[in-house]
Amino acid sequence: MKSLKILIIEDEKLIRWSLEKHLTSKGYVVYSAETGEEGIKLFELNRPEVVFVDNKLPNMQGLEVILKLTSLDEEAIIVFMTAYGSIETAVIAMKSGASEYINKPFIFEEIDVILENIKAKINLNKEIQILRRQQKDIITFDHIIGEAPIFNEIIQLSRKIAKTKSTTILLLGESGTGKDMFAHAIHNESTRNDKPFVTINCSSLPDSLLESELFGYEKGAFTDAKIMKKGLFEIAEGGTVFLDEIGEINQATQIKLLGVLENRIVRRLGGTLNIPVDIRIIAATNRDLIKAVNEKSFREDLYYRLKVFQIILPSLRDRKEDIPLLAEYFIKYFNLQFQKNIKKINDSVINLLIQYQWPGNIRELRNVMERAVILETMNTLQAESFPGEIVTLNETTKTFTQEETSFNFTSEKLQFPFDENLSLYDIEKLMIKQALQKTDFNQTKASELLGISRDTLRYKIKKYKF
Ligand SMILES: Nc1ncnc2c1ncn2[C@@H]1O[C@H](COP(=O)(O)OP(=O)(O)O)[C@@H](O)[C@H]1O
Ligand SMILES: [Mg+2]
Image (tube, rainbow, N blue to C red; front, top):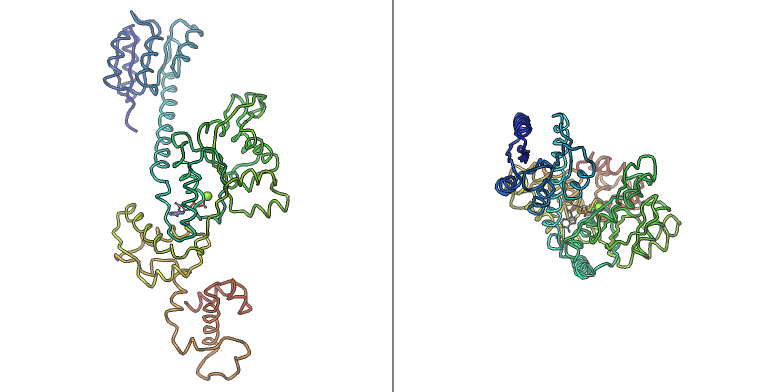
């Protein structure tokens, strides 16, 4: 980070001078002014991130200066200096927009600590801003790739539902089918898009922590609650809360969540106040919620509250026609990221990608394409740049000869000696090939057909280098 710009507004020459000297020696860019008026001018001219303002100034008082500065830039960070040890003045200063205060005479270590904290805060704010911008810039429905009829229909419906203000949405689908993306797109295409989009993964936190994250707590609610903390529902005011992996929350939190959905009210842990919240809730899970309801691990009433509008995202193998389109999109995407210039994918590889089952859905495809773009040295993606388990099967199909495919795979028909030229090795290889073909390369079905475990089948696929 480039060095912070700091403005000192202080009329006592000695203090001004020594502070200026200290801060300059620490590498900050320092401006100083003797009066409030002069300080404001310097502020407008140089836009320092931090301003040290003295309480007693000629003409214009410190508090007035603070008000003026914060009206010029509400993000200006102001450190209020007071020699009079008056807590009340400090409190008023903080209320007027100062973020810190320091008593004179001060020691420089104190100032150093304050500035370190300020730097950390500025960095954090920058990160948040970048993330916000990314969310906004990147994900709308225009960024969601797919033209398969079932998918198209879902996009159209989701676009419509995005326009409703508060309708709760439940996103279902296997991992990697785009639930996160849809949640972002819905928020970004809703009227709430200038308000926060807050997301929490319900499975990533222990139960008690999840509850305090969601609902916040009052000071003293438990031992560690030293100060009041707002929960995410409150923080998201006006915006959208995305509850990812909702299938994982415990019974107590389920009841509380039901309360939020029914009454749009939250209560902080240890609190008695009912705080109204204006938010849209989007929940997502890859779990079978109906099953969870039947097994009583998920409350039925909550399930119905959540599925006011339900979107089921298809797995990638159910919209295979989108695979070439997605692959092409990821080539462009990763070309940009890695400064490559890959034009397309070898046709035989495309066929392989279409045949593959993609248990990790688009996330898996994206990862595979990223790896391929990195590894490829030509301008067309070759099979060698893809993981073995994806490209080996294709070679099986490709190298089948007429003779081989006419080999009839049923145990009754296997009569010894059926072909003296075939070794046991050849026979096993052919049987596996045919089983795979018959089952459309579904390894689970093929292994059942062959009477071997899936692991054995996998091992043999590798062994025969399909
Ligand atoms: N239709 C799509 N078009 C482009 N990229 C997608 C699409 N669906 C998912 N992705 C990408 O695939 C990855 C997984 O998507 P994500 O939304 O996190 O899935 P989920 O939340 O269902 O596990 C992300 O990197 C996302 O950007
Ligand atoms: Mg997700």
